[in-house]
Length: 134
Image (tube, rainbow, N blue to C red; front, side):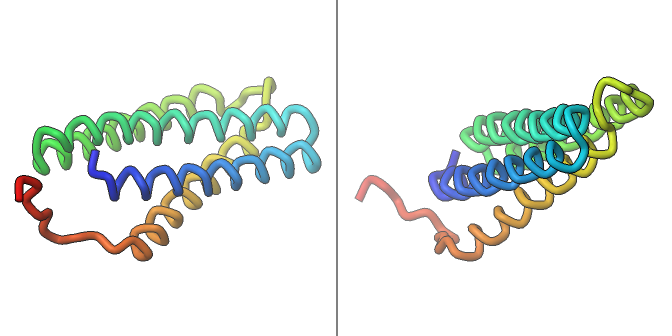
């Protein structure tokens, strides 16, 4: 994985973890134990999904930019299908609060995306990588 991208991903993950912790705390305070479980599942799902993307895209980046793009799009589509399945499967669940699950997942996704944009804008990245053998 490119060093600049790894730097951005690490910082975005830290921001998302903080937002996730706040959401779990709010869920516990506002909705009790079922909301807490729903929020925790939402944070876990987002962490797993972004972790899978980071690993897959990082490995594909070593091959070529084209492989990286195909991998990014493929993992995105697979994750959307899995998310649709999970939301449909657990829609009427009474084991946890599905609304808090969805709200927490959306907030964490938006936090991660916003953090990536923010850190990308702050990081000065070269458009052309210099030769390392000089």
